[in-house]
Length: 255
Image 1: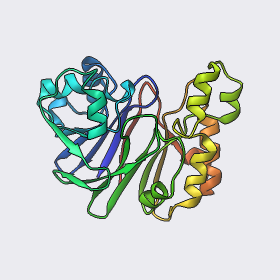
Image 2: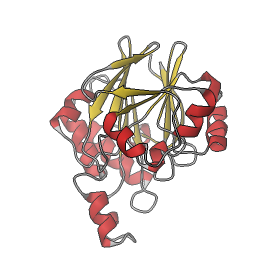
Image 3: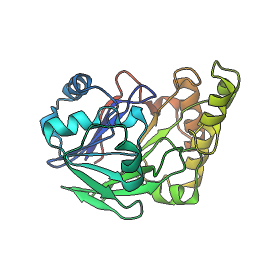
């Protein structure tokens, strides 16, 4: 099992998860041309994908899904709440499968478990991807950590974890007051210290890969995100990888 990012941040998100011959794209916030180029960097083409799974209806996560799915006849999995909000702003999707946030579903060789999260969207979820005993947890776009989130992510070998902002940088940064309140609120985005606290709450004994993701380009730095997560894990800061907006990150393998 392996995974890689097309890019991570407020300008577009996409994550590929592969197990055997199955490849699933989680979210796609890029144009069709940009998506092709970013997949090519990973040695893939859109034709190699089996499905797209969607976390929520914000444009940096769904902006490119409809055109990609329509052109390559890909099934799109999303919650009913996401679909209700999305269908008002999106081109028609040829093939939609509904996600129950509390039940797992399968795409080829991948079992996918949704995780309900607090975020300012209609019915947002994040995901755990499983292939046999190998597990990848993904948590971005959550305003705070719940016991359900911590329990759902325990025991992973790999974790992609939101470190959206540093609280001090956000408070003293360029955002207007209303946006600061939204980003830092209970239905906004995880701050570095919140992400670190999640690591302290969950079972991290199997972790082999930790990637800080969805970093704000104005309210955070890779060094601050790495420092917070490394302190929680008791590891060197350099061991923590950071997903960037332009290049995401390259393939990581879960043995």
